[in-house]
Length: 159
Image (cartoon, rainbow, N blue to C red; front, side, top):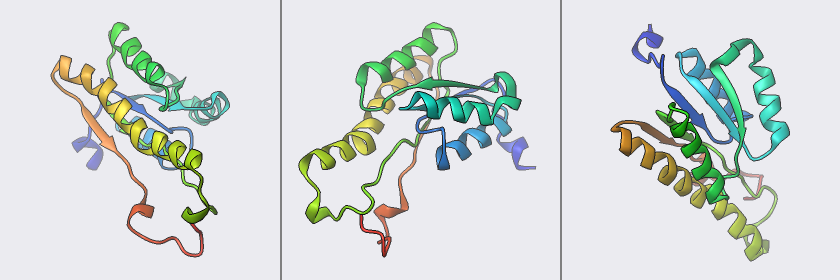
């Protein structure tokens, strides 16, 4: 019943951090609803593993290595899809990291900047690049996923 309400046939979705966890679950749900999905991750092997798990879905899924901290890579994928005649209709910004086991009072600036570059600026880069294409075509959907760790304390895990 619900899939009829969320028919995504003919839509292309891009999922950052799509090779595992919540991102992979998003990829599966989008495919189930009829979308074609570009599964992205920073690591070639992770992309290959994610696509391998979905090999039975055929052309519904493709993989692309993309680092959300690399502006040219993000813009490059958005532009490649547009120039191929299949611009993204849906963007799921899911890529993110946590500094588990590293108390903030011990975190150095490099660790802080890496986390901000992926978790915050990476979302901005993706929204800017894919959003520009969506504005040009007159429609699109962007979903930004955040961790519950922004609202709760994950004791005993220090973050």
